Image (cartoon, rainbow, N blue to C red; front, top):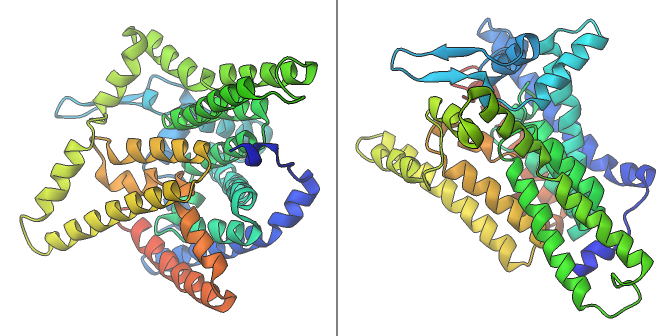
Length: 395
């Protein structure tokens, strides 16, 4: 942790040059995915662009951008789906794009997601490069790009925007830029409820850094002007970090008249909550009641086991504490939510540090072997993304 914080970060121009191979590879993978989607959609007489910008959550974000908050749908079973469940940063950016250009709100969402996906790829590279080196950084970006649900990175959803803010906030923590880390955590908290994971990472790292400085007896201790400045910036970062998530949750509570827990009532209207994984476990168990549904149950168990194994591997390899805290919170919230089980792979997209052990392994392998593995998975991911988005898609 100490070595990571004190290592100097490269200049912006130098950082971009260093990340160029990763960004080029990311562009190639995403282009392949979009090409497969457009070809598949054309064969089914569907609009690929509509699939990317005007279905599922994308429609809810557009309604917030266009009409503001207050829209809700009452279902026959009594559930109330309110757009207060959707955090405001993406709709704000959609509205901004529409205000300064001829693009529609949906177009704005697609543009924001496109730009944010590259910012996220760069941030993932920066984190992995800082911890494990540039080859691991390139592999981490490509692994994130070729995830089976990677097509979501190109949709007018908030995953890419959130991942970009989270990755750069974590990088700022690792390089000791506390105010930047706190400001980015604030914005992440305005993007998705899981912004709490970024806040937890910033707070945990700050607490460890504070204890370390209190025990230090060198020239940079908090008793010197330089030490006091660092301490002040760290405190400011800690204060800034939760303001986005807390501000929106408290505003929703005030708007609904239900106090600080009003946002939980909004989520309950979507039958979404945190139950420790009980509902998900029951969902998986029910798959074994028939065949071939049991095969899906086996796949789900293997998927969850793989996620746990990757996290434990990162823990055993002493990943930096901020990454472990962030990944743990993202994973727990994704796997232990009580509803929308088909969304769980999408909800895990921001948990990119899970990919770092695989990235290190690929970086240590022969380049031809790594290229063959990533190329094969990229093709499979492109085909699956096209099939998935033309079918059930990401709820």
